[in-house]
Length: 321
Ligand SMILES: O=C(O)CCC(=O)C(=O)O
Ligand SMILES: [Fe+2]
Image (cartoon, rainbow, N blue to C red):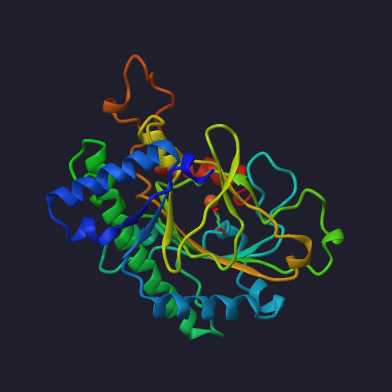
């Protein structure tokens, strides 16, 4: 069964430090997988095991804080984009029952004086856990760097200049989301159709996900079957989001995915995961690249900027009013 779903395991170091042939091979492999399944896993991504362990220690400590402390970091005007979002707030597009999760989001920290500083809301600092703020900032920077390299490889695959995405994502509006799928002692007490994360597509360019603490992530194959996505050890799972799909007129696929509930007897255990949603700056034009449009592949999407598109999508999932 696994042979039909192409989720290659790729070594990012072969792109960053490899010779021409290795770099080309990496670009071709990521492009092909993004075209066929929208997913790859990545090794040698620049995050040490120690950093990932420290991250999960902090994430567990954050969600173990009392509810009233967590709620003090929930600011409705921030539409979930910074700080805490409580249980029952996010509903996948097209669903009525909210996901069984709570999360915390960290946005861009601008260093130096870029006028974007005024555009982005400040991150909320967790007063109770100074180390959380430190570790998540380091993880943000490392994932941003890995993401930029991956976009270079993708640019090459698309026949663009290798640095096409560089200035678009530099100081971009990316989000690091730490997620807790909370324990449920009595599965009968939640709505029958409630799931950890309902089927959805990510909004951004690409998503880099750090080794989730348990099984559950599944992607929808082209022939309509759910397929479990498994990562080795500290590998990152990387997938295409809707912005990259729009830009490439569906050449690269923003594949539907979900997080299913575990068997009933395991519902009382938490699951944690940390996706990094790599966004460009809001003025990036997402108009499909001319090279991806031809008689066989007519233009599908209207022209829109990344900022306008993000706003539209946050309203659809209930985070923005
Ligand atoms: O928790 C996971 O494994 C995936 C989460 C996800 O797909 C998302 O937050 O967009
Ligand atoms: Fe997702």
